[in-house]
Length: 176
Image 1 (tube, rainbow, N blue to C red):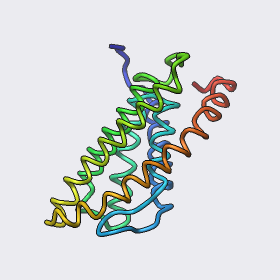
Image 2 (cartoon, one colour):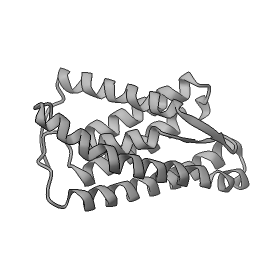
Image 3 (cartoon, rainbow, N blue to C red):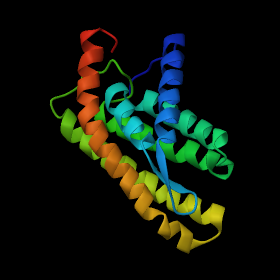
């Protein structure tokens, strides 16, 4: 396990990445009761693949919780903080490791795919429980499953296209 202290630079970058999560999640189509198809998952997957687990986990947790508070989904705020934070940490840690400066291995594509699949699974399981608890209905929770699957599928495609290019640009400019 890598020991490293979070520095001011890390906090600033995590804040900017959290803002990207908020903005990406606002690009949405409402679906079901309390669910939506959005680009927030694409942002989380991309951040995880490019920046690693710590940045992705914190950015996803903060960004999605802030989105819920800002857009009137307050019953989901803590759920999103935990669920999306976990998803970001999972995809980032599997795809890249804990920190941005880790070297990307030759198996990066495979690790990214596995990370996104596991993160999507965590998100789906977590939100089934969240929708059930907030709505009081397992039928509503099950009815919202397609929105989670669609958001994850869109996130998978977008991150698969954007993450390698973004990583190369940041690497060429010595930003990661």
